[in-house]
Image 1 (spheres, rainbow, N blue to C red):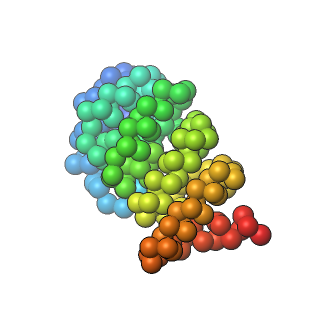
Image 2 (cartoon, helix red, strand yellow):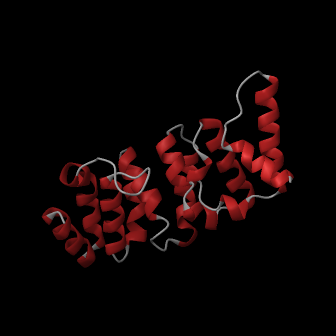
Length: 181
């Protein structure tokens, strides 16, 4: 493992406020290339590990998100699934879903969103992903959160695309077909 990361993990375990100084430099220290987890980068993994190691990380996450660049925000959103923030992360998810950054929207629709968003917010997050061309496979909880209203929204979306002579995303069709069967 990276010696810098080992030290940073030790330091944040002793004092969560150290996250403020180490979080921004993670990409320079560990790299930004792809990680083993599809869609994740090496710095995503390292930042989430830092969040997991820091008792009290939940209190630091809103500031890390607010003042972070896109990579830092993405890691905070991914960290919501492994750090117990209760409902405090909902504001961060809502902010990310207001952006047009596919990386942030994808990260926002992780397991935290699947567990904490109410039905209407979850449906709108899924629909935003479809509009933005984000693969449905990247949306956590879709198998257990799909309901009739979401299917209605997806059918309407597909009908509008078809009427306009535009393609319907290929990964949407099996969802609609499965549910119609």
